[in-house]
Length: 50
Image: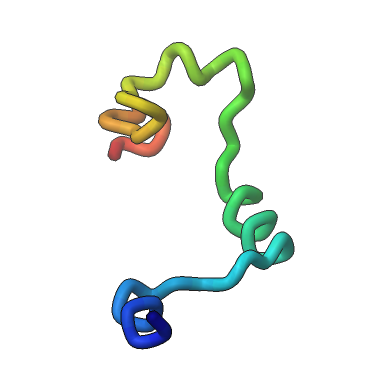
């Protein structure tokens, strides 16, 4: 199982790391309905041109 976890770049739960990643997201709660997404995976974002 450890070999598998390394192969998929598994990271242990770390709230500091998660908060660091989330700080890069600048969406307001009211903007989410305007972003083209499917099951919360962003398909197209007019702000970031993704």
